[in-house]
Length: 281
Ligand SMILES: [Zn+2]
Image (cartoon, rainbow, N blue to C red; front, side):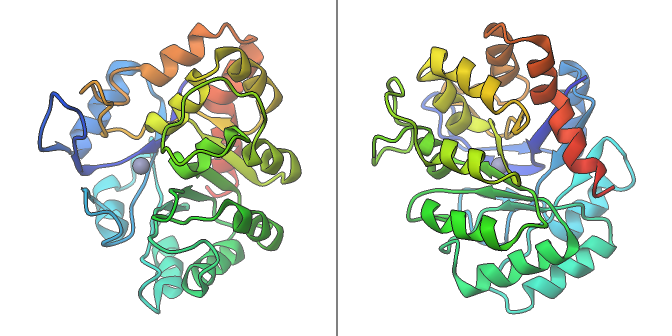
């Protein structure tokens, strides 16, 4: 059994040196990836309106329409907090079939009033929130995240992105994908230990890099936080080598290479995702 908690449908820009332009993945391409790799079900994420100039992700009403009633596809929506009625829109989308808030990739600080309004609605509705964190760009300020988790206790939060995963190390770095062994634990471990409601998805380059930079640390980390780590890929985004996350199996193969106890691997590959989603279905 396999669950990918981080997928999209739509156009994404390539940042690979050997592939220029955009890649388009339609619903049939997502299903093709799932069938080829053996993924049982996925979370399909929206992104808020104009937050990301490098992609055109099928989102919200359009996504709900495309996904339809296929139970292998769990749609999350992401109304744009720049619009004053984003909270009401989220409520409407939930009535139409949306199961969570995400990918919450917002070009505002985490504790901006406009962001808080949407998070408050998600909390009221008991929706899981999958967020993309990136320094000075998207949903940023790891210290403020602590206060958010303290305040909104009814939502499960799933962390993703370079501004989240870089905090696996306590050594400050301005790089998006810092390398090197973890000699001092960071805020990420602190938050995972402190709050029951925070999870992490290992998708894209950010999650994989944070684990690969120190394999021995990764094993200990995944065992300690076995109840909170989720397999995700960020399909149809591309890795720096030009291959496509999901079909390239980078995340699954890496997890399998660590020889983790099978009970730990099962939780990361699907059981933790089931636990989160069964509450909202
Ligand atoms: Zn994504």
